[in-house]
Length: 48
Image (cartoon, rainbow, N blue to C red):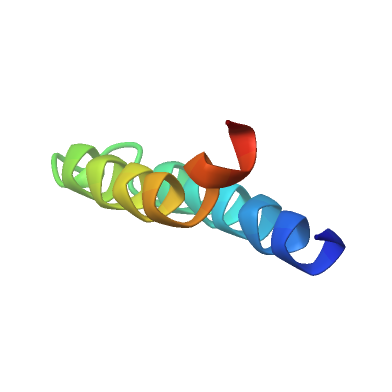
C-alpha cells in the first residue's frame, strides 16, 4: 500500500509541476484534465 500511496502522491506532484509550468498557457486546462484522469484511474479505488 505504501508504494501505491507514493505513486498517487507522485501523480499529484506531477500535476502541480504540470500546472506550474503551463500556468500561462491555455493548454494547462487539458493537462489538468489529463492528470485528473490519471489520478482517478490509479487512486480512486484507494480512497473508497
